[in-house]
Length: 350
Ligand code: FES
Ligand SMILES: [Fe+2]
Image 1: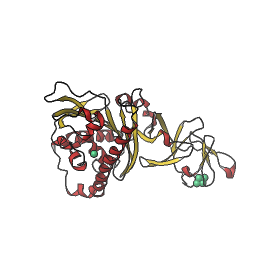
Image 2: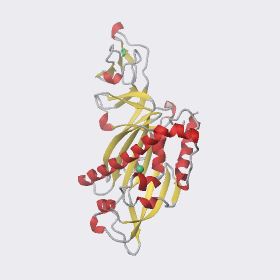
Image 3: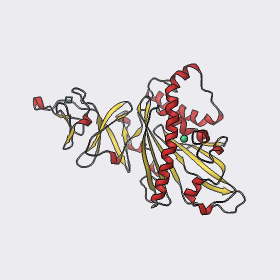
Image 4: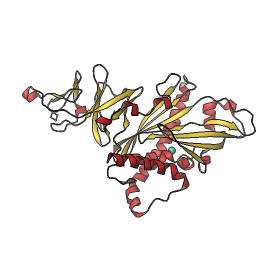
């Protein structure tokens, strides 16, 4: 399946975002993750539970049932399943059954719940993308702008999109300054937990800088700015806000106010649809609700433009890939590298 060699396109041995923590409550919800319906709820003690979402009796969705203590009771004939999946009651025979509904490990970390749907033997919470890298759930950092966009496109199209920012002046042409990404040299770096891409660009002051740095710091010259993208895996990519590092003709740069990260959680729903999680973290203007609101407005608009473009591509991509090979440019090198990494993960899972 495009763009991979295998029919199977989910890398399973990863932690994926399953839900924002606040979404999992005592009211069960169902979400399709990596092609499987999953029901999620909390025990009375507050632990998040994830279980295969269709009742093994007649396949009624368990999320339409109700909770009884820590067990979920199917809304059709009342079979009950404990939080560990064990079938503990079949009303018609007043017993349980020697049956266990599959469950999946959930790790709740700050605002996010991560799910492991791969090989249980390889499940290790240390493999969750490193929060230290992006200030999630850390003092001195602010989490804001949490969104979940449904994307009617395969997850790889989103990965490709995020690894190639030459789309900025086209898809996001309302944002001034995107032109500088067209020909910017990129520096690739293999880090311990991510494949990093740095771009050093020269740009005039933009309205976005007004928002972040304050209009009082505005100046006429070009500034040097660093843009960083980190690929942690097919499940999470981080892009960065602009950090001005130097200004031509000025001895000092406007005060560096901190870092702003845009996080992109990518969880395949089906082979051709994706849950696109978005949120931001920053380590400045921590109490600024107006900045939160402005960033959220901008972010929803920008992510929405990517979603629209990807959905258009998704409708044609299988057909097109049969007719023509992709014409790749120099700027595709990082996206191609990342595809190779994902292909290797798929190959390893066989
Ligand atoms: S379908 Fe769930 S108990 Fe019958
Ligand atoms: Fe984009």
